[in-house]
Image 1 (cartoon, rainbow over the protein chains, first blue to last red):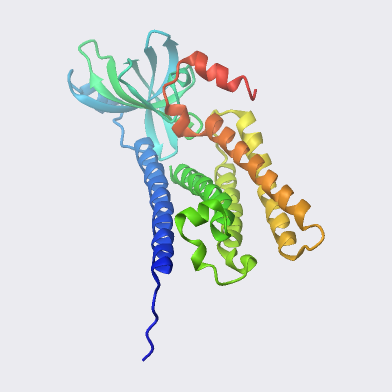
Image 2 (image 1 turned 60 degrees about the vertical axis):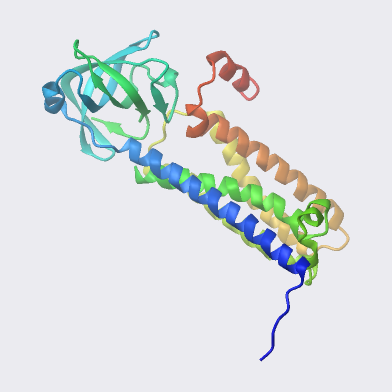
Length: 147
Length: 160
């Protein structure tokens, strides 16, 4: 039986290649994980208009809204959308008011993307005045169709 | 949302591979970098034969970049995003295919080798710059970063 001897230089070279390859694999895994995380946050289950109407103040809620009007001080109003398929939503007759501040996490876009016509998936707490104090706003404009 | 996942994942993997692809020739031949990392002693085959990961990564980048462009187009929906960024990405995709051709010619070239290597190098720099601009203008990760609005306007004024 023959035995292959690995010199110290060759051993170091192999270790370096292993570390470099592992770094690339880790980066790719992080990229896939980040894409999956974003994708899940976009398709997270949302309440319909009836469920939202029954939500008590102080309760956490998730809804999809088509923005009708927005104000620069961090408020917007819009129609609640009902999910038909993962990428198709229908308008309901119910409206919702959204409020956000510096702590609100805006995913897949920025604050300027919350404008009339924009479609957003919001996660937040229902206030006493029925407005939603948002914790996270995911910009869905362009990714979903509204009927 | 599957189309979003595949678009995002293929885009990020292609971006990472572009970095790896650009680095590989400096690791696979005797350079200051490869000597410092201690990987020059591993070189037993001729340089062009050692370059096989570079060739395969190049083809993989082209395939991933094509899929990255194809998936959202075939879904028929595009988010409201910078058209300039998309044009820059289209330019980068075209250059990736051209870069493969340069690479193939480089394997056989004798007299024109020097000029082809310079062209291959500068094309790599242009592709990297275009990809970075595309990430900045269309990428969701950078769009989520909270920069003051005037900072975004300042950055975008360079390319719009």
